[in-house]
Amino acid sequence: MKTNVSQDISLAVVANKGQVWRHLLEELVQSNAFLAAVLTDFQGLPFLSALHPDAKKGLEDRLIETLAAFAPPMLRTAGQMESFFGRFSVDEITTRTKEGALIVSRVVERPDIVAILTVLVPPRRAYRRAMNKIITQLQKS
Image (cartoon, rainbow, N blue to C red):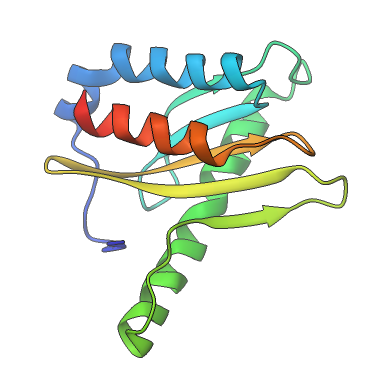
């Protein structure tokens, strides 16, 4: 996994792929009953997101901003650990809440863009296959 902080998201790529990617995020959230999904850059700035209709009304922006800010520092730290130790590669960062929900972050790499996908998964819900599928779709679209 590359976690080079200097790689910024290309606005041209986002503008070009935004509709397709937004649809993919919405499908991910709806079909898996995830609470939210957000694509961000490595500074934690969200550029696309999707929320489940049951998300708490009035807190949508705060939820997306929190999820967007969550992953970058942890992924940068994981990247530093990889460069120092070199014996492992980080696939995802997962945090479990007291209630059992998961915040899962993965890097999405394409030749023209590197982004972070973060999802909020309800307790006792499978997520890995859905995450793998959307990352493949984002890379191919």
